[in-house]
Image 1: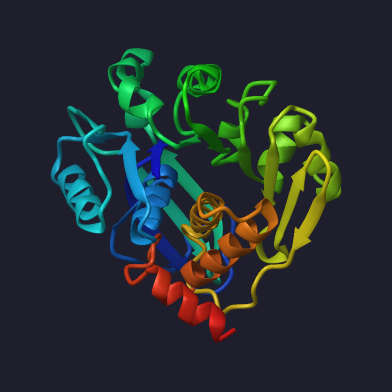
Image 2 (image 1 turned 180 degrees about the horizontal axis):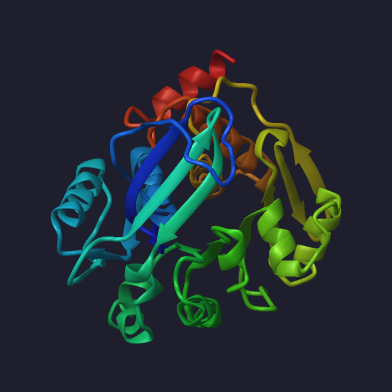
Length: 303
């Protein structure tokens, strides 16, 4: 099985606020060492560490950090032959963390946003032969819509991740080509124009009305609401001590895809995704460096 991930790859910079963050003021914080992140990059690495053949289509700078980012992915087993190298700096993401949770994030993703349909076309033969495409909304609306439109003439199944509230608005009005939509409550409200107090089941139902085969609506420490046209299920979050929330949602998506590829149904797959997210919450990295199927089996057996 081949999964090709299309979307963000960047340098992650994290700052852990000491105590409660105060808006509009300078906050004392501990700075973590720069790591590599980005939704598609994280998903591709998680999958590779879970022994799924994964490839990444993104854009990185021709700077030292871009080179190091690609070297780390190669070492993890990710195919980076599709990556576009651009002049200048690689994309960056900064996270302000409060008690392990994201208080504020800021992303400069001009590199990935510069990808064009021509870039997609030059890689199309490889992309079209993938068993799954995972596309995040860091890409332009044009790239996203092309992946949806071409799903009918290619072999791949399609998973889409909304990424953030502003970028969720890049999703087209109809999502009929999408097999799995990963989206959180805030992103769902932004995309649908829904009230922020809307019940999760109502949000999932409204999302399914846009046409995807299934929806994985993430709710942080309140778990996940999964839905198809016929069934809805709420999956509680695992109780863990959180070190950092960075990458947890990406781990959930990767774990879900891992088990869908293995033949599990959506709800069992999403439950596995939640367990993988819990493992990721316990590390300060966006992807666990020791992740493997064996680690996952040992940790979940001990729960």
